Image (cartoon, rainbow, N blue to C red; front, side):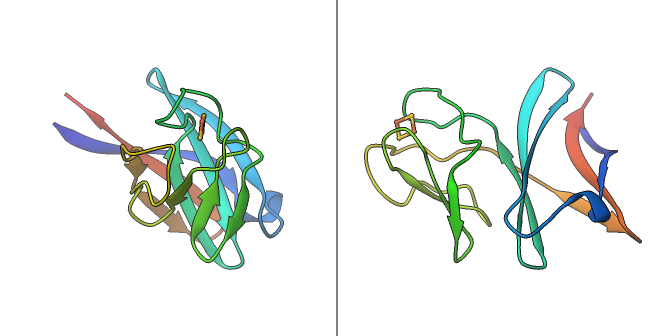
Length: 106
Ligand code: FES
């Protein structure tokens, strides 16, 4: 498996705490910004497979808008119930103002 990076957005499109739903190779991904940091995580929460989009972001964490589970944006780890399983985290590449997300391909 190799990681292939796909350009998905330009930094100029993102305000602080913006989020963007991205579909890449049948994977649903949420691109998030917190101040000058960008993160790409699974679009879906590991608790009940509902969308994390719109979740509150603070201190490199996102709070699921449905039942309040918190996830670390840096690792994908579940930090509070009712979620116990981590969510997928995707590598990012930022060249100039172009943000690319890496997905694994055969
Ligand atoms: S769907 Fe996210 S905490 Fe329940």
